[in-house]
Image 1 (cartoon, rainbow, N blue to C red):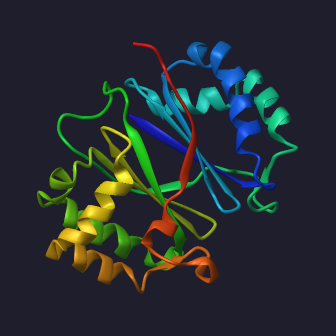
Image 2 (spheres, helix red, strand yellow):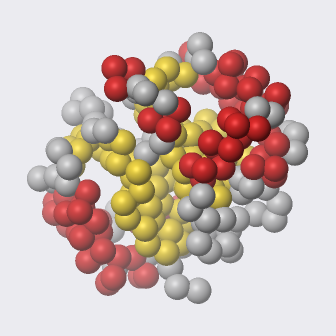
Image 3 (spheres, rainbow, N blue to C red):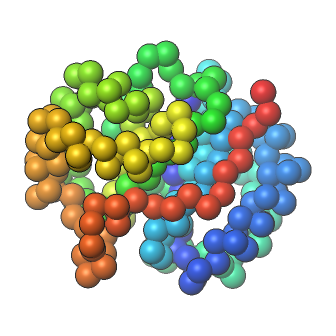
Length: 223
């Protein structure tokens, strides 16, 4: 499965209107887009996180072709009053993937997966170290114990996206339970990441739950 993460800036609390626009689009057009399996939209303060999963042998190429669809251009026009570029100086809204781990069996054919999205800030120079730390963690049985099916890390203009796929919508509760159980491996990686990954909005920080984005829209292709 190939994942595309696109980033925008929200103009106020307009998630309901955005969800309605995507629902119209996905009811007619999404089933015609080759390889598109799942779409999820998340809001985090002023950030819109748009996640698309593509399947098939040429999933990456399918994602590139989908972005060129004239209907996608029309979709962008409808969204323009509600979503602006996160950085007006940067034309490309796609985040860069810098880490991927997937359990066995692969998630390509699974349905009903729910992504828990953690949003923070990360500098380009520490990205390799962040990836290394997660590589060490995921080489153990820890992700299986948490119920994580897939983990992906992305960055975009200094913003960090940690995406974990779970079989149900209990991702936030699972992360909270990991804190309560205090598995030494979980405690260690949190401590190791602390100087590398910074809070997105430290002035609003109250607890670790404040780093988790809210999913407000989901579409999945029929089997």
